[in-house]
Image (cartoon, rainbow, N blue to C red; front, side, top):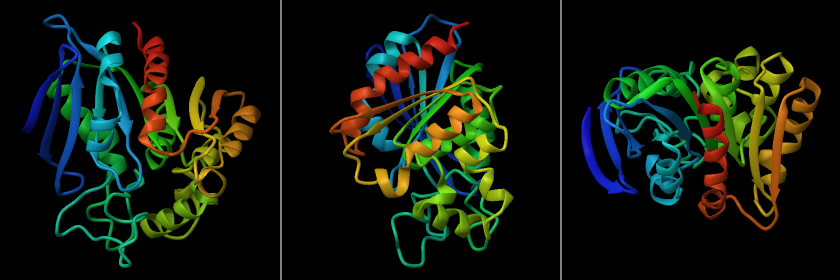
Length: 279
């Protein structure tokens, strides 16, 4: 693992790191904030998955999470959203919603993406092992959150690993990718024809098929331009009501899809996570 940069913030350390990934067969960059802590202490970990077109840098620079993480004693990890490099295939039409920056947190099975686009295994297996080996992380206390495409990733990973993640939350998530244009394009391109593999990467479908967590927290901007066509939080609300999952769905009047929205409510999410990450 290579250290790209470190800086002191709120008494802790904000770092950016790079390593050669076995899953993606590329170099991968990620950021980690470690709050101030006693020597030898092990700290809970919050994973943050970013959205379309983003890298680790978007939340690291704009998310305004460090003050709350320092106060609450939380390690904050932000991976990239897809593999990158000259050998990594991109969308043939150079679109923003597929290919580079848009890995959708799945393990692709379709050519030419199957070789490198292994974001599910990278986020759920490889990177946690690296974090556990190099940082004071208590991997028995993990939670996960994300934004937009990353909200989709956080919901699906949390629903499929309920014993690993004590809390799951999202900002403006794609809750039912199998029913909206962003998700239909990505799932078809990475996984092939619609079927069981799609349902394994669709939060609403997972809940319909029996996946359960005790509670979910979702914040959605009421002025989000993607709300009606791509996000459809009402589908998640209906699925959770039917399944008996305690969903807190906050519709934030006047807020959009940007990091102005995310940073406004980031501390609330982190406090919600911290309550569930206590020993």
